[in-house]
Image (cartoon, rainbow, N blue to C red; front, side, top):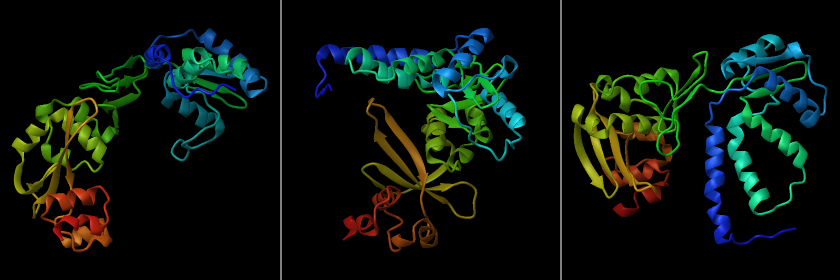
Length: 311
């Protein structure tokens, strides 16, 4: 058995090549022939599942994962609304990171592969889309026709889907965060047409951050009535007028990323002791007007930590 405690400079240098290969394969939209797909399926069943393949007429190719899911549910008598998982499946080109990782160990570090034949057959799935090799039939999908990324290789597109299939099914995404259809307007509508109040009311913090990055926090701040309450080293506490009976309390947080970028997000925080108790009953007594206390509250500190600097 080989024990590797430290990579050589040459081994480190090759990491980038395997990373690039994994990305290239994973984000590929190169099409494939249906005949090649069916031939591959006929080898997957005996080679990986140890069972005979279905008849040629029962090897089906769908234009998208949604279409494949509908075929599976229809042929299996399942309800698409009540079924959310099917096994077994192969992820196709979406498994590229898996093979890039292990190929590096096998090729560069010369770690022995005890299942080389199965691994090689499994790796061929990178040429195809999703694959569901079920007992009596098999359904596969085409690859996406479009994949749009930002400069950090994250799904990101403005004005259209970031990932799209030939039948129109796809994903809206901003900076790597998938947007549910009810929020797709934040990706496709012109920035000037978006209501800043609606942006701040997105309940999911991660999605709200992605939308704020697209809209621009400066636009939100200029369009909203925001009154500063207090500030700390990494945040400013505001009362924000959203047209409600009472202002909404929000904490503007700012931090630096590993890539050197500055991120900002506005996170809702309790404005009254009643709201605080709903947020976390153990924090009764925290100073709602202190930005640092609210920052610690959001990060999940205990009450003693929240009021530590006040003692």
